[in-house]
Length: 317
Ligand SMILES: NC(=O)c1ccc[n+]([C@@H]2O[C@H](COP(=O)([O-])OP(=O)(O)OC[C@H]3O[C@@H](n4cnc5c(N)ncnc54)[C@H](OP(=O)(O)O)[C@@H]3O)[C@@H](O)[C@H]2O)c1
Image (cartoon, rainbow, N blue to C red; front, side, top):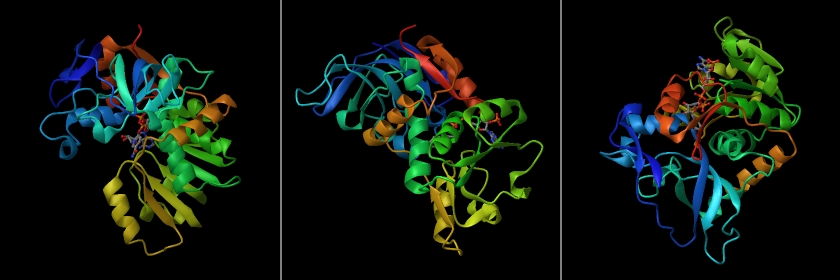
C-alpha cells in the first residue's frame, strides 16, 4: 500500500510517501481501505518530537488520526461487514504499533468505529472525527452546555473552532467567536452571533459574561477569564493540558470549573455527530484537499496555524 512514512523526527521533509507493507488485521479490529484522512496539529506536533515521552527515540511510522473509508475485513461477529462505509479516529497512544490513517489501508478496533454519515463524501467525513469529537466531548461531556447558555470559542475559525461553533448553536446556545478579522465571515457563516477580531479587541477587556469559555488556542486560563464567566461557568482548554489541570486543582472559586480536555476515540460520540450531520446541523468546512503525494504541503499549511476549517488528504487522487 502507499503511505506517508515518518523517517525521523523533524519537519514535513521528514515524511516520505512510498510503498509499504499492508497492516494485518487483529481480532476485534476492522481492516479499512482509507479513502480520505485529514491533518490535525497533533500530526506535525508528533513529527516535531513534542510527544517523545510517549513514542521514544523514533516517531511512529505512520501518523494520521481521522479516516473515512470502506471495510475490507472484519470478524464474522462484527457489526460491520466488508463493503461498509465507516469513519473514525485511531488511537494516538497506539500509533507506535498500529499504523495511522495517512495510508491507503489502516486497522482500528471495531468498537471505536462508526457508520459514516450517508450524506457526506469520504473527504467531508474524514474532516470531522478528531475535531468533532474534541468539540463534542468538551461542550457536551465536560461543560454540559445547555440551551440558552452563552459560549465563547477562542480560535473559532480553525478545525476545532468552526465545528464547535456549529455544535454549540445546534445545542441551542448563543456563540461569541474570537478569530482574526480575515476569518470573520467564516465565523459568521458557521453561526457565531458575535465575532471579536483579536487583532482589534482583546476579549479579556470586553463585558461578555459567558457560561462556557472554550479556549482552542490555549493562550488564556481560568484565572484570566474568570471575570468574564458566569458564577457557575466553565473554562475549557485543549492545548495547555498540564497547566490547566494544575490550575483547576488550586482553583479558589469552586463553583467555576476548569477542564483540560484530551480527545478520546468514541463510536457513540461519533454516532451523535453523525445524527447532527444527517439533520443538517453540522457541515464540514474544508479549506483544501491534497492528494497523498502532497501531504508534506498539507503539514506545512497546518503548521502555519492559519487554517480555516480542515485540510484533507485524499487517498484516491
Ligand atoms: N486536547 C485535544 O484533544 C486537542 C484536540 C484537537 C486539537 N487540539 C489542539 O487545539 C489547537 C487548535 O486545533 P485546530 O485543529 O483547531 O487548529 P487549526 O485548524 O490550526 O486552527 C488554529 C486557529 O487558531 C486561530 N488563532 C491563532 N491565533 C489566535 C489567537 N491569538 N486568538 C484567536 N484565534 C487564534 C487561527 O485563526 P486566525 O487565523 O483567524 O487567527 C486558526 O483558525 C491545536 O493546538 C491542537 O493541537 C487539542
